[in-house]
Image (cartoon, rainbow, N blue to C red):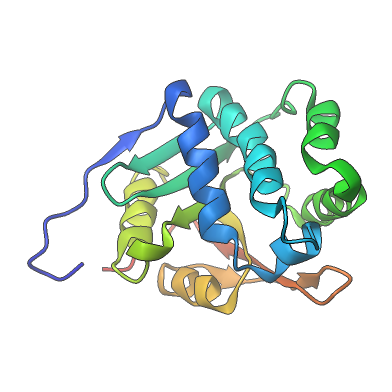
Length: 201
């Protein structure tokens, strides 16, 4: 987006958006090193990742917030972590069905996420995804500013999965914590945004 471009229209996604949102996240995340680790064989990778993302996207409809730009498309999936957050219903069974022979790799990633997740009250950005054809146009920044404006002083947390996304979050007031990696070296950058951090212009 340029300074003369109109601001994107951001709306709250609902249950009817779940298939589309899960597909969008899988498409945007396909080049990530972590995705190649989770599903080493390219054949079927997109379908497996879409089914995996759908579990948490459905959960976010009830227990989180999904900000969607329809005409971009771009999406941010947040979970307010200010109290106990239940697991998605039937999570283990659904994950096993989605991941198939790669289940142990998904479980390992889950355990790493849990190990590094902060205990303080915060909002957790689970996914920020922009369609590859629309990346680099400020849509991710627009989604971040939109949610940051509603945090009410609360901090925010995320796990960046590429240097490019890490740098985006640095511009929005996030600060890196200790990195962690999957067995093949695919790295995640846990990042924390203090409650009083300014938002990028």
